[in-house]
Amino acid sequence: MDTYFATIEEGAQENGLSETQGAYKTFVTLMNGQSVQIHSFHIDAVEVREDAGMARVTYQMHLRVIRDRVVVFTVLFTQDIAILKTPRGWRISGGDSPQIAETTGIWPPR
Image 1 (tube, rainbow, N blue to C red):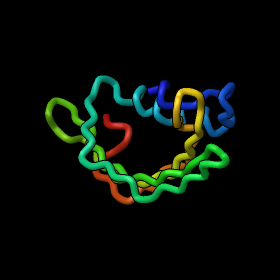
Image 2 (image 1 turned 60 degrees about the horizontal axis):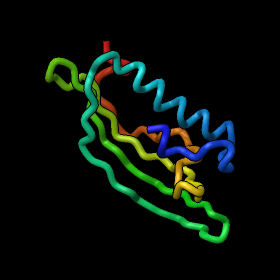
Image 3 (image 1 turned 180 degrees about the vertical axis):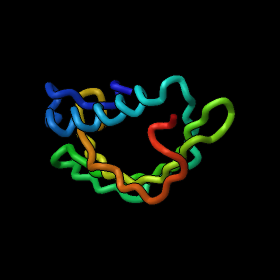
Image 4 (image 1 turned 45 degrees about the horizontal axis):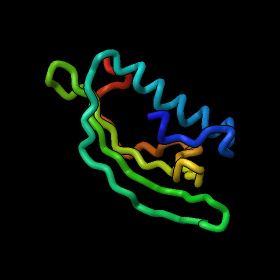
């Protein structure tokens, strides 16, 4: 997933970038061999500032963590992410903490 992120050299803010990348890397590490199924994903809002080469995207995702074909955790969350126009195209440069709407099970799964 790192290819979807802007680099510091491309203008991303180090704190926002490391927090956002760190969050997804921690999630993947905690998966511990389990599977993820994205049940739904949709974009709620997009605000583009083309002149500044920046955008904000609000998305909502519902995902499931599956172990041995059994759903052990589900979560529905909404998040704002900052997007930066780079020579490689539009890339994620950071994001707010996800807003959790509903969960079932325990995270991280045991």
